[in-house]
Image 1 (cartoon, one colour):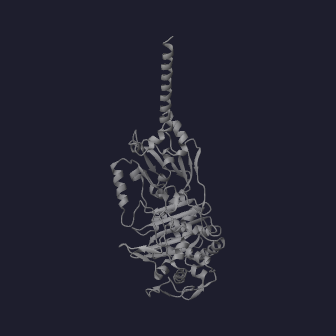
Image 2 (cartoon, rainbow, N blue to C red):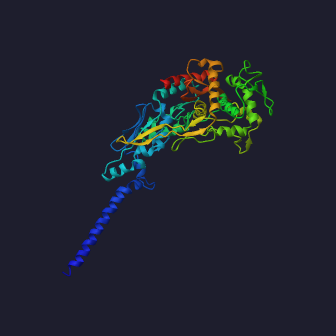
Image 3 (cartoon, helix red, strand yellow):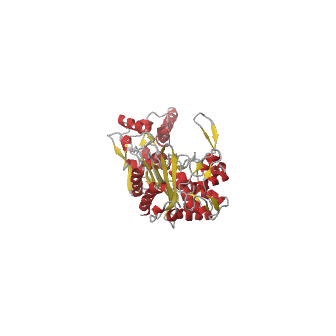
Length: 489
């Protein structure tokens, strides 16, 4: 009997140790497994990322991105019509860009929104599956945009196009020429040739840098398409459609040189109502308006439309910053303030004014949506493999850029550009907008058409830019018309 009590104590202690060990194993394998697996100090982290398939990325009922087995241990990514959708999908090759980066956790199965399922999968020894994503992109319109940009852009130059739903901010088109094909380096990401191809694309060829898309990630001088924003600032400052403005030749005050109009007939070359100066795109009147407003007011007014922001399209997926600078830093480090001559040129979208096609589409969206810009986005929803919804887009107001009355006034002016102004060649295409032709000495012009569709009931805003000789009305307008014809289908 004397031995029973010590034996019982030892037995109870041994049982407690066994329970403690089981609890520790379950805690490590279950609750802590994900944190340990994804810890940056875990050497297996980068060796494991290709061992499981990622979720699919789809749009309009088409699977655009999927995973395929390279061998018994590794998976690579496959991109349908790779260069067409590259500005949106980006790529995954260990590193990632665009949607592949923004939702990498969901696609790989690591995201906390599917952690409960992952905890159970890990506990039973099953590899967790990533979620699938559905995009807002219209695949047919995206292909149309890509082909149209390819045709309209001068050899060795660039083009970009964006279309967005004005009521939600959903991006329907984001196309670029040239563009990269991620199949060249992401199908077998560990192969030497993949790294070599990615390095070559990073270097680019002249001004063409395929890995930097021309829809979100490059800025260009917007030329006279910028007069949409200028007209909005003029209306906010008390001007009206019938306000008489000077459209005669403008001699710049500092240099004494002329700021010429593209033509001197009709409204340009004398005096005219502001609406007529807009419809016929008189540089002189908008150069004077810019100097009267001052560069600071242009800069501050532009912020209401998104200039100066790094617009976040999705988490860690940013557009390049568009700018209306009040001063610039030269190559030798000097700060140069924007003087009167430069302010006048800024008023017609030149000098140091720079914009992405996305930003100019947002300016057009403010007009089309009664003054409100919705936050742009490209991912509609995320679905786990059991089809439960783990993410859904939540349309949000981004900026209140102008009053409803001013927006409706500008809608009429932009219709006038097509029916009676600088873009009468676009009649019958059911689009309204503003032409723009920015000189880029010694490079070819940046040719723009920025607007909305349908003409009488705006639902979509767009911006198209192609580089080459000629004007925006003839070289970008027809591209916009072809894209919107497909979107409206």
